[in-house]
Length: 322
Length: 300
Image (cartoon, rainbow over the protein chains, first blue to last red):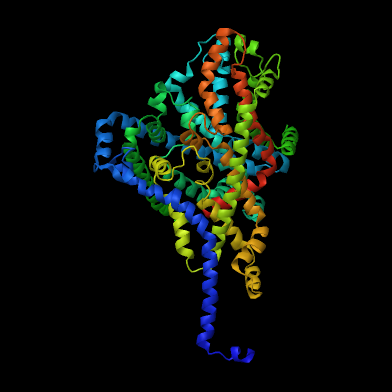
């Protein structure tokens, strides 16, 4: 029996291997099935929901039963509400670009300075502290904001009063919020970039630094000519990825830190995401419109991502994402 | 003169002024970053009287645990929220690790013939999605998940970044492991569960920690999908408390008593109870987190 099996023709032997391979394939596929189901339900199914952008959604009729309205949802928003649309767009893109730029500069500096230090313990302590806000939710941070900025009881206002100045009604005066939110943004994000750049610098071949030092280069020359070129590609790819999200904002920050984005602050703090979610919560009739804006948001973001990636490829081959 | 200069130079070389300035820079930044935590903690330690008379302060004159006492006296709603939060967090973490690891293993095997398409299905979601409103309507009207805890657990579990991190870890393991197991007749399931999973605890730890933190902090899904009076997570409880803080404070100053009204310092105490455990525990897990981020950054 056994010898017979060994004497099988080559064709049937490859059949056997194929069978085995098919079994492996099935097993591997079945491992990915639960993940595929989650993706199908929560990532791909909502893509069908995009048809809502072209419909007048009525909950009773459901997604497919609602009336088609073509591009009405888009035109109504862009023409009927042009002024507000402009505010939303300038807030979203303007604040994102501003915060991103400041954050990038600061994190590069911090990463490079941290790399200059030699004491392992202090480095660890700084790393931990700088990174802490990353694990705190905006809701928690909003309490700290409130403790400081509250009109009557706030810490900042009592300082102002002690110095003989007038208290500021922070939550009703929009002009302060551009920089207040910048502080929030930096507080939360600075640690992430710093640690990534620092970690990246750790992978530089140390003999490069030694050689430079032997040749008489000073600290700043080393930073400018070895450290910076080393992290440049990763800085560029980080920036590309972030710019891809330039039409999306951190909803939590704009919503909770401003104390639920009250009406009075919106000229400076309302962004596309807060607008969409407010529409979802308060005005069911605007669901078509908010889907339309969301769709524009993703498409515009994708186009920007592609464009920036192309530009980056001219600057530095290594920095591109695709 | 020249000699003196040299002495000064030598002295400065010893203590390294530049380093000193860098330390100073980081100390200032660290204090600035810690300040919000400190201010929260100090306000939660204020006595009701001091709060009403002098407002919040970073340096309470007579710090008391009054607010915490009050919170624990009326602990039931918070305990319930805490329990829900823990349950959701643990379930999310386990599911995230399992789903992503299984997916990553399938995608990491070069012999898997559907590998490219399965990979694409995942990566595509990184760049395109239905958007907030489409997701909301689909989840509510098709999947019927309003007020259902599953909406807090399942949707965020699959992540392209997590799969990439685990996959690159799998691919970094010696390939001979898989091959020799195959020769011994092990099935793909056996290889995955008995060889790959136990070997990849560092990568899985990274994913688990970020999943846990993400779930603990998540504010969006609880806010959108849960009505008043239904299940509450700690994060949702905190949001609603923040929303009503103004009212509480006003009523407290009107009546001048604590009564059973949660005061501002009580709200701060609840916030501290939510935030501080994470802050205190985190430094021990930071290593994993940083490692994962480094991989993520390179692969992105």
